[in-house]
Image 1 (cartoon, rainbow over the protein chains, first blue to last red):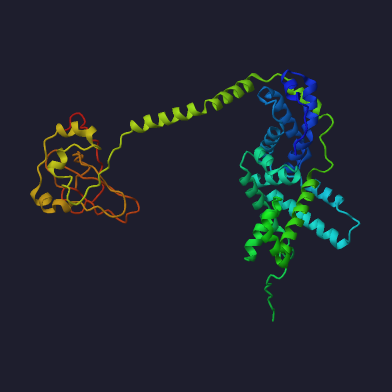
Image 2: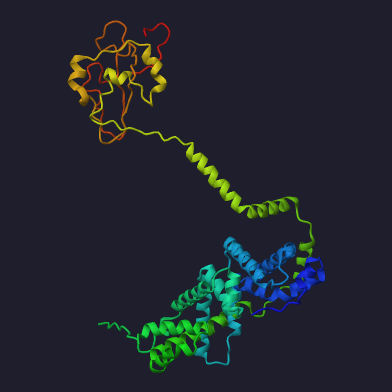
Length: 196
Length: 245
């Protein structure tokens, strides 16, 4: 998924055009902020990272390649900033996410389904937080932003096969965290312990 | 077909959207196997839930309206001199990464070549005892600085009643504990060793053993007649003025 940019945006920015920089910001702020928020789960920290990222982009604008989209570079800078900040603070905004989760769940569904859905989402949120940073990045790039494997690999600076492997292990780790009764395949032998 | 293997491959293909004509055998198996259908279906459902969970993390939250103003202010602010110097030096070091690596390797090589390896010999049973004249006059690496003291003194003759009898077995190092041996002749004050029958000014040869505190008791001096069992004060090897050398 490539965010469209005007052809000469980077070139105009390189000439010191501040209107071009504003346009640049408005074009790319959403994916950058989304990545920062998905990793940090803290809107304030995510905004700090957004600012840092665009200030850095402005300062190194001479080194940006006008022929290529700056989005992979911006995403990479964002991911690096996120993990350096998160490892420094290690404070994840659990209450905000829980609140959103509770509000968003479809209340028209059956109560038991609502409970189950909330439970699964909660397990998945905790599972995503517990993933190693590289797997977390892979999940966010591929499943949240919808980048292709090649694009995600370019942002993460790895091979496509490595990206596949990270996604595979991330899903495997998440699957293990889900409730046991939802993991058993149909027809699998179930050990039953008889209490006497 | 091997059900777990097919199931694993199917899940892998489905995750990355790679199910196609080439995966027809897998799809045939899927049509027949309820367990694999469940697994693949579960995987798909989990991915949907994962997308929802990720969307919840970012849903509805946008950067504050004044974010652009702050970015612009920071971008246009002059960079502090220290920060500019730091960023320039790190950038230069980054460009000179190869040169830095080569210089570091060269420095390590120079240091390694200038190092002197000093072999430490452990005395074996066949070596001459340290209190024999040969051992006393032979310079060693560890006592080379004290050789001028040995030259100024008359050479001590081996005592037939002790050294010859004891021979190589005069020193039997204990297996445990640290034992240091001083091979230079030392001088003991007469008043300190007054309970030992000696004539005239005392010049004697004393072997001093330093033992580890963990060792139960000292047995080092027991068989040497010139040495008392009591602890004695040992003066420095350099004779003071007025004392016999």
